[in-house]
Length: 195
Image (tube, rainbow, N blue to C red; front, side):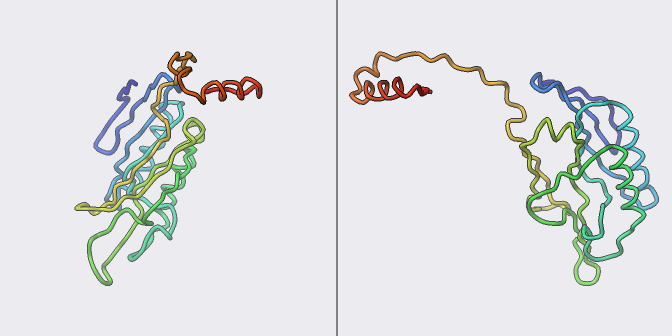
């Protein structure tokens, strides 16, 4: 597997992953602009990345943006920020990949009326990436010291090399097993497969 860095900044890293099995795909790690007056730049960054390459694309990280009001508990939900994210998602042809576990990924670590919980961290992908790796799931893990929950993407057999079919070889020691002749006869008569 080869990973080539295509571009990077304080807010992203964009790489091409060539695993020789799947023809290659992109991953972009994102750290969204945290200040309110710069959040629109996260949308601009995603759109700029979308115009760079046409490959199956996975994108994940702390976007510092939410899509819907149910992703925020406490404080004010800003519709204009959600619109920025939604427009960028549409432009990139991304879909949210869902998750297992906790509903939120960030807390301000305050109590009472000042307590805020938000889902800022996520994975999104285009349809081509989802078709390339259909056996995935995302889990929101438990936080330890950070104000963010770690998010984990599990990809079933994502980086496995194609398995070569092993040749069937008869082992002489099987003849010493009294059941061996019976098993071979049953399979032979039924037209079944030994392996």
